Image 1 (spheres, rainbow, N blue to C red):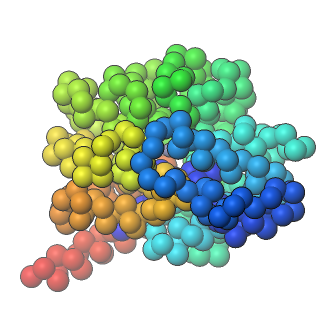
Image 2: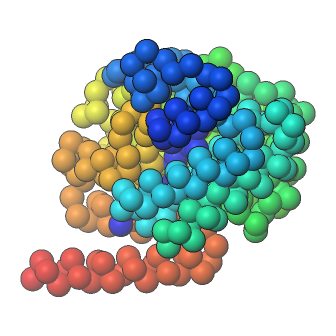
Length: 333
Ligand SMILES: [Zn+2]
């Protein structure tokens, strides 16, 4: 199965949509076209990677554009063969232009709902606080996310540059607001920062999932603690290679995490920048990182259990996974 539990709206803008919206906004098409402008040529560093992602911000200039980009993101995931999508975005970056936080979130939720209805693929949205914003701004983002709990928003996250803004203490109140609203909690941590940042995110913010967590592999004690506490790590192999978090795709610690008992789920993070959708990330797990059928089944089971979906969606995915596992074991005999 393909459950996409870590992907960003800002990393899924179609080049043809960028061309159309850019023409309307008076943004000249860059030399070589929008696709090349949004993509990374290959491995880089987190700051360059995030600069490429944030170069898409001007396209989120009004409600219709937000709804359209969100709808197309869901359609593209469904076309990739995905069974479920959690689409995250930083609403504060798209305010202004006469839109407040609630209007931005409502427009994205509308696009996700439209895409889900059109494709039949279940999807939910996660609101990201951003590390570069002040605690007050991130608390306002959390309050807005809380108002949409049960109306399209299923989770809350912290994203952004972990090297420039490592402090987690200052976002504790924002996560408290999101937790009180019943939202699922995750945090980008130990992506560029040290392994201990993952434990800090769990202890300070109460998250049940860690985005990336690549550097957890470098500290045996942290790795053991993450496994023992059942903290889920959202792995995004190509993204980690492109941000310079790992030296090569083959060097990704996903196999080691699995062997140590860390529950894993998969995401494609910013597929426009890496040119790698979730189906390709899953192939990397299988072909490059040595995940066998049992390891992939464990990942699927964790994804169904740890997703922030509504109970009805979880039940349906669980039923489909059991059916798929039965068929696979039947064909193995
Ligand atoms: Zn991410």
